[in-house]
Length: 323
Image (cartoon, rainbow, N blue to C red; front, side, top):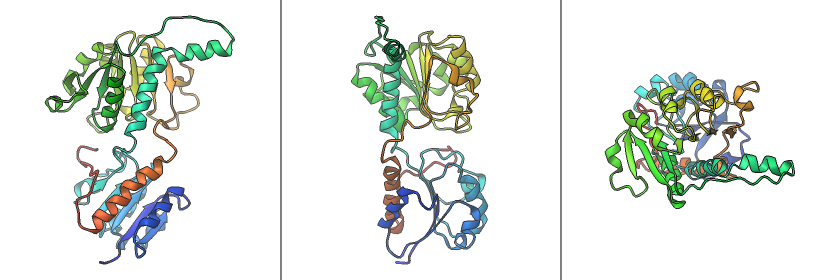
């Protein structure tokens, strides 16, 4: 069996690259962070592996040289920046780390709901001020979680919501596919999303970023929410219209929001989000469990051996759909 040649777009000293030692000894690996690092390797490469959020320009630049490449893998779940037209139009499959981050992000959704239900910000503030401040809190089991984007992350959030006795509503491209799903009490089509919003106490957005989902939750959707509603985003920042959300938070038209993702990252120091007291802000690390990169690497390692054996790959991306 001929040896395989792999282009690895990643910092050469990244600790998770140590897992590449599991590949066969004759695998030829070239590692770097710039297109220049791959000028020689690209024409002979069979596989492109990328772990950098800003790797798309590198892949695009070496693509005309990489005529032998037969598979591209992304260490992250989001691939919107990687899918340039030439790659989309090619026969080369793209795979990602879909599912690796679902459980931790499902926990973040639950933590965010508890943060607002128990008003933990008020408790912490009172503790810091040594102030005995008794107040009423909410319970989740009487409430409803709406999910926008019922994929791996959405289902992880739904499992946790069900565990504490919540109802779960979900928006799906094919609502009929939810029939018989024990986690969903009611499914809505994408066109029915405004109708779902006022029925929910919490809305978790877990949709990937595609041309169809950009701004999916906008002025109309946020305006339809309960005044006591909380919006949670663990998908991609631009799926929620930032200006619409910022206005609703500033004017207290909804109770609050919990965000792990943003339009621009890192969030600029002068961004108005930093000033809001009804926003729980996570710097896109809700899925950064201790071994998250190593766990994501295991998907690549598994796929490498499947690829070597001519078997179907797992986590194949629908390049035209964008996820």
